[in-house]
View (cartoon, rainbow, N blue to C red):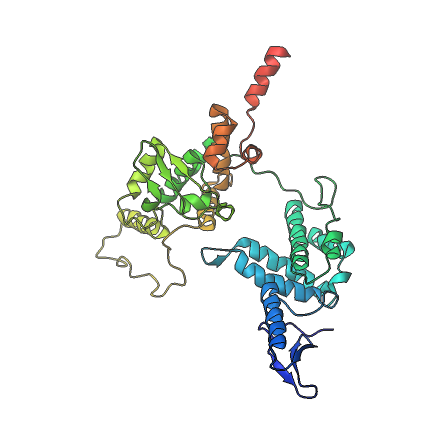
Length: 391
């Protein structure tokens, strides 16, 4: 079995017995020609260039193990799946699937990892009660790892070709757990939740319901990102979901959205409009206003706080903290739980009903109408009207 791959390129050294230049890497000895000659230097540069490009070991495709392929791919994925200087969730999913493969097949040669091995990994995910859709995505990630390795000439092309024969799990035809589709949230539930939400989070919900933007986009709004020169304001998020596809994103903001945002415009242009630290300050101010104990008695305001708390209110909401704030409020108020991502579905359904599919596609920022149809529920009232007339 070959040695574990090195993280640095192999050194150019002299083989004393033969006088040739050699490279020692992965348990192999690669002869380059006469030591110090231009020809040997040229071969060495080529090998190092290939190593840098592959980000992997200088082993033959028949020798490389599954662990070595995954290590090489993780090195590539760590730099590829990054956004705003941080690793994306996609990288986390790749790490998860690599951890699942390593104990069973890590020491095996890649040419031995075939469709049966892939189905075994898939069955482990089924037994762990993972949803069918996530299982299919994880299986696709495994296929992607081996396709990348074949493109880097680390493994034979026949390996990913064989894995590609494994079809995804179909709904109702496997033991995998099914998850309900994401639907729009009823406006009555939204209004009931707004009564119990903190003021800033409530404004985030109202704004997202009006403009149909993504949760990450409503969390990232800053005054400098909004063009307020026209009758309709134009919000251009600094980062968004499809920026890696070189597509721009513009969120139109009408009068109702402008009314909400106007309360957050009188601040530094680079400061986020919706901040947890502001929400916490408002909460403490309300609590102090409701205080019944005289200020001369009991605890002085702020005296019972931790000097060095582990977590402090941040300068901006994230998608997770925003969603958590909504879910916690629902639980406290005894309201059906819902996620802010469903507000985008609600907005899409309303826009499609009033202005058509193309208008919903433009507002949501989709490049294809079939993606918009996933977000916008069909208007059943139209079907009932047709049935009334012709049925």
